[in-house]
Amino acid sequence: MFRKFAFLLSLMTALFLGACGKYSGGPPTPSNDQIAELAQAIQALGPDVDPEEAQRAAYVAFTYPLQLAKEYQVTDPPIIHNIKVNQGLRPRGLCWHWAQDMETRLAQENFKTLDLHRAIGNSEKALRIDHSTVVISAKGDGMYDGLVLDPWRWGGKLFWGDPKLDKKYEWIPRQKVFELKRQRRQTRS
Image (tube, rainbow, N blue to C red; front, top):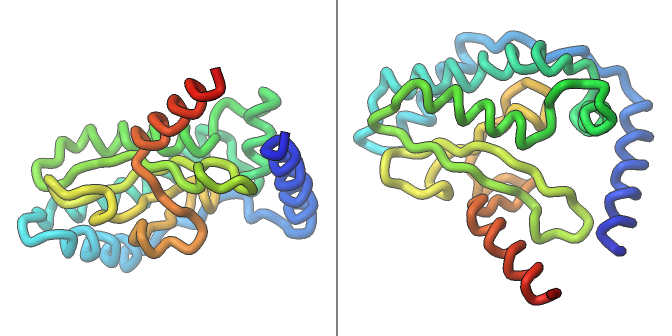
């Protein structure tokens, strides 16, 4: 009951705040400097990361969300877009859609020196809605050693950073979140 109330309160707040400002209508085209900065950060994940792979990953991470924003028909801030998706007014664009599509696209690159992980943020916070993303790391490293690649947060404009330092989300590996939810359901039964 409390989670439903918290969700409704969050939804009402999002609607109020969404009405207060004008959404730009889509993410700006990333600069070469932004892509180079991310490529450098990806390459710095480990000494064996191939610089060419880091460059390709950064390019895809910045440019593919622009394509998705068009496909998803994003014209509003993410929370408002989510409402439209849930009402059937938009085809896709929930955070897990972004994460799934981004992971699928990055996996097509067949990286040899990089790994992809899925994470869910705030799954253990009563007043927050779960949020999904993809994380990239050096081959063999865990998600906490990688970088969050989150295109949902800003409606197609990439947010990236250290998952341990993200002030907005407390990231947990997706499989661990699923296991915790299964355990809770079993104890309620």
